[in-house]
Amino acid sequence: MNIAARIRAVGAWAGGVDNRKRKVGKVKCEGCGKEIRSDGDLSGVEYVKTKRGTELFMHHDCVGEVWKYKIM
Image 1 (cartoon, rainbow, N blue to C red):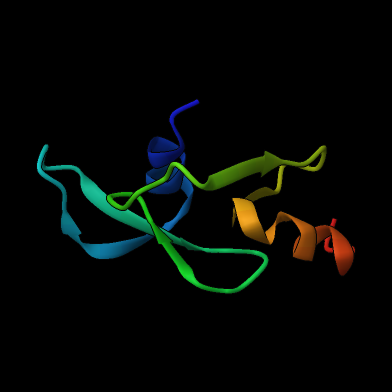
Image 2 (image 1 turned 180 degrees about the horizontal axis):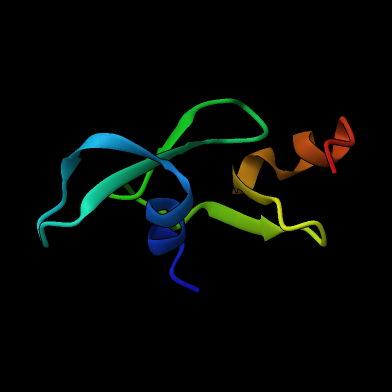
């Protein structure tokens, strides 16, 4: 799955374009609240789509924090 494409589709516009002239999107990590941008390094980013259709993005290290507080 192309996580950058999902961030551009569901996230807010970050106010710029990448090197291929596509708008840069941004979302917040569900665990720590930091910004995840579609033009950044996405190798440590996880994507979850729930049964209700909610799309969540989080850092790999924050996955434990998300389940700990039972956000899902």
